[in-house]
Figure (spheres, rainbow, N blue to C red):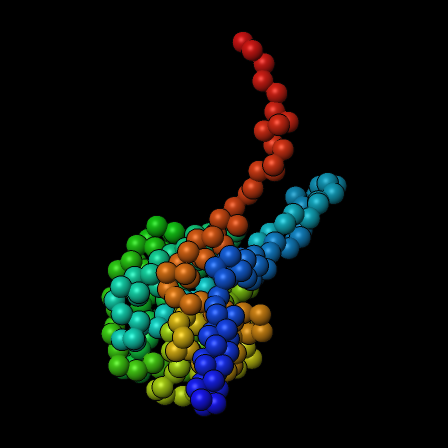
Length: 264
């Protein structure tokens, strides 16, 4: 009888711990928005004055240009349906970036690496391949699910470093954004290339989805303050859209009250 009581207490405690670990969608959305907005926060910069003029030039807020590299886990555990949600999340991130720092030939740029096994890990498209929001989002839609048998996060980060070393634009803020659902189990440990990226001035962010991710590994991959957890891909998709909405200009609650209308 005592054994049964102990078992019941254990189950109850475990259930409470599991419930407390659930990710709140609103909080996830705010965390994503806060990090992205901090990356894209405008800085005051002086435009050059016209030659020979005596005009006093005032500083203007200028958003940094990004080289934003999506690194998407495409291993078999994700499933084809959920990978579509991963791509949707990527497209929302493109919209978010463009809203703050316009994407273009001389603006912010986006690339994408897809990975599963070491052999299947590859660059889907690079920074110079597409320079409009519509073509980038269309290209993301065309990425096919790899359904690979392992999760080579380390080699994918090594490839990300090579891509940024060769094709990164001087002056652009470089960001690697990883989305994964599991622990790396193939190739070099992800901490090694993640540390190499940071040593080169690259910001590394990671989103772990589901209950199979390794929190220790996530914290080794992502920068401090750029590690996120989501219970599911549907939740991540919702939170990303909410984060984008938070980035849009909001009318104050008294805006319409302050409007006056004249009869004509």
